[in-house]
Image 1 (cartoon, one colour):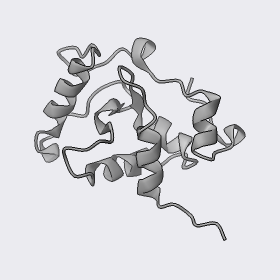
Image 2 (tube, one colour; image 1 turned 60 degrees about the horizontal axis):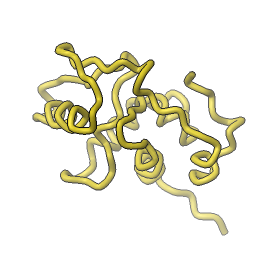
Image 3 (cartoon, helix red, strand yellow; image 1 turned 135 degrees about the horizontal axis):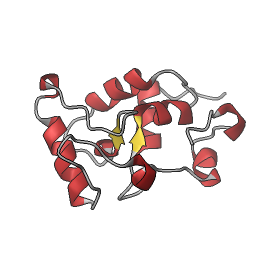
Image 4 (cartoon, helix red, strand yellow; image 1 turned 180 degrees about the vertical axis):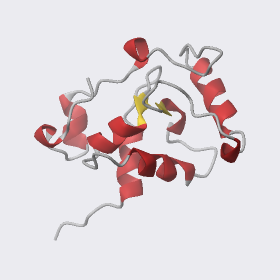
Length: 125
C-alpha cells in the first residue's frame, strides 16, 4: 500500500532540494510537487515551519523575484533577506532578486527523488 505524503511534507522535500545560492518561486515549488496553481499554499506550508529550520525556506520567493515584505511576516522577511545575502544572492533595495541569474532549474534527478513524472510538471522556464 502506498502512503500519500502530506502537502507540507512534499513542499519541505522539494524546498530542501534548492541548492545554496539559488532561489525558486512559490509557484515553481507547487508545480514541482504536482500541485499547479497552489503557490499560496506553498507559502502557508513554509510559514508553518518552526525557526530556525534545516529546510532552506528562505530560498523561496514570489513570482516577481521579490522577497514578500509584509508586516504579517513578523520579521521573517528581513531574516529571509539576510539569509539570501549571506549565501551570496544579490537582493536590491526593493527586495528584488534577478531571477535570470539565481532561479533554480531542477534536473531530472530531482524529479526522480520527489517521485514526480516530469511530464506532469509544467516547466517554469
